[in-house]
Length: 269
Image (cartoon, rainbow, N blue to C red; front, side, top):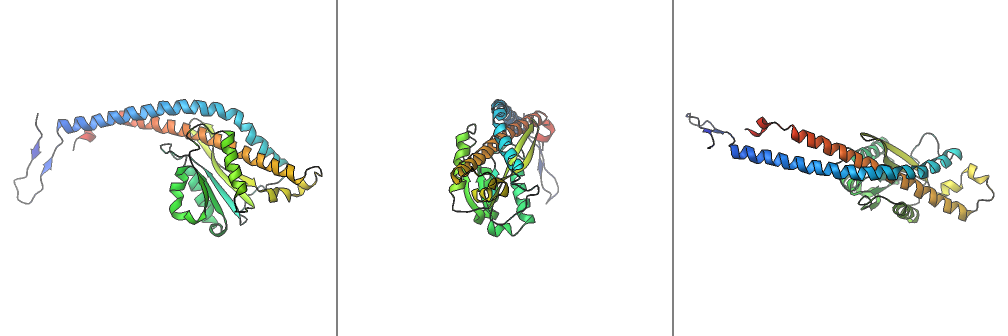
């Protein structure tokens, strides 16, 4: 078989060519290969999602208990307002191909900074995951306090959360309040971008409701604050992991279906 080429007999008119059967076969083969790759990635994500969803159930009480303490003691106001020395924490992943799971977190932080421009002078960013760092380094490099990666290579553990919490506590930046942004898993096809306030030890000890407990000394309060911080981060990491794997599984499923519906006519020029 040979390629068909039509050449205009008129001088100065451009020639047009049609794809040969070999070109079409190469393009269809590449589409089939992509379909196999996305199907394999979907299977891997489905396996990881099953484990992430299973691990999420026992991890949620850690977050529920810490949030219940904040609400019962009335430590956090109903409306979260920027107060100056704030710390913004983004919980994302190191890998992409998971829809808007990472970009939704960055979008929420950018919206907060855009609506409160004074925060760029006083607040700092703690970014968990390479994706949030890559999306924010160009515009907000000067606000970076620290970045954390390689958390999502394996299922996040309480030790991972404790490491992040200790890094926050030991930093030289003395914040009044921190706000953590992460995805809360809902269903296989949906998640909600959530903002969770975190209090510093000074903010916790200066609360009027904490002051009524005479038996709580500074050492006990410090230990409890560290546990609260670690528990909230641990629950957020688990929620984010389940959301990431479900989003990647959905994205790869859509990519596989789209590759299967790739029309042959689009291969012909």
